[in-house]
Length: 483
Image 1 (spheres, one colour):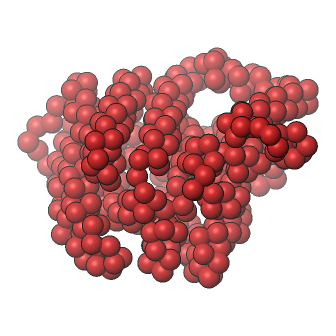
Image 2 (image 1 turned 180 degrees about the horizontal axis):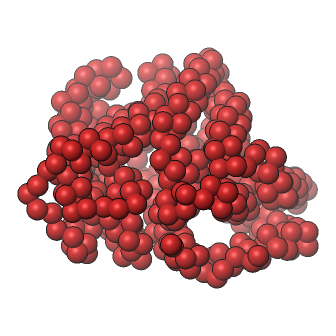
C-alpha cells in the first residue's frame, strides 16, 4: 500500500518537473514570439494537429498499463517494450508519408518539411516509453523530474539559438527533437531494467483490453482537442490560427500541466486503491478541492489582466489574443477539473466508460467549433466555453458516481475557492480601472495587478477558509494533509 508520504513526494517531484517545463516553455515562447512571425506559429499549430493524432498510436496505451497492472512480469514488460519500439517507428514513418498530403490540404507548402522533421520524434520517444512508465510505477519521480527539466532547458536554449541565427521555424522544431532525444536517452540510462529479445502474443492480448479502450478514448478525444485548429487553419488561415493557438497554449498549457502533475503523481496511488472506491472517492474530492484552490484564481485572474498580460508576454502586435483569452480563461478552469477524470477511470480499469465519455464529449465540442466558426477565432473560443459547461457536468457526474460521490459533494468542495476567485477578479478589474490603467508602464501595471489579486485571494482564503489554505500549504511543503 502506498503511503501518503509517497503520494506527496510524487506530487512534489512531478510539480517540479512540470513547473520547470512550463516556465521554460513560456519563457521560450515569449522569445520566439519576438523572433518569428505570427504565421510560423500557425504553421506549427497545423503540424501539431497531425503529430497529436499520431501520438495516440505511439505506445497504444501500453505505458499506462505498466503502471495500472497490480502485478507485472518480465515477459509482459518485454512485450510492451518491443511493441513500443515498433509502434514508434511505424508512427513516425506514417507521419512522414502523409506530410505532403497534409501540406496540400492546408495549402501550406512548408508544412510538409516541418512534418517530416517532426516525425523523427516518434521512434525516439517510443524507445524509452516503457522505461519511463516503469520509473513512474516504482515512484522514481525525482529522477524523472531532473531529466525532464534539464532536457527541456537544453532543447529551449538550442532552439532559441537557432532562431537567433536566422533558422526561423526550424528553431522550434529543433527544440522539440532535442528535448525528446535527451530525455529518452536519459530514461534508458537511469532505468535498471534491460529488455531481452522476447515478445508474447498472449501478454499483448491481455494488455489490449485495457489499452485498446484507452486508445479508443484518445482517438476520439483527439478530434475534440484539435478540431478547432483544423477548422481555423483550413477556413481562416494561419494569421488567425497563430493568435488562437498562442492564446490556447498560454491559457491551457499551465492548467493542463497542473492537472498532469496531479494525475501523473497520483495515478500509481489511485491504482493501488482501486479496490476501495469510497476511499478513492474521498481522495479524489480532496484533490479536486486543491486543484480548484490553485486554478480558480489563476484563470479568473488571467481573465482580469488579459490585456496587459498579452501586451507584456507576446507584444502589442498580438492584441487580438486578449479577446480569445477572455473565453478560454473559464475553459481553463473547467478543464483543470475534467482532465482529472481519466486517471480515476484508468486506475479502476474502466477505460470502456472513459471511451464512451469521449464519444459524447467530442461530439459536443466539435459541433460547437463548427457553430462558432462564423465568428472567427473569437467565435470558436466562445463556442468552446459553452461546450465545456456541458462536458464538465457529464464527465464529472459519471466519474463521481463511479466512486460513490456526487456533483453536490463536488460543489461543496470547490465553492469557496471559486467564490473567492470571483471576488478577486472583481477587485483586480476595479483596481485596474481606477488606478493602474493610466500613466503606468504596461509591465508595472501587470505586476501591480497580479500583486493585488494575490493579496486579495490569500486574505480571503486565510480569513474564511483557513483549513483549505492550510491543506494547500501542507501539500506544497510536502507534509501530511490535515484531518
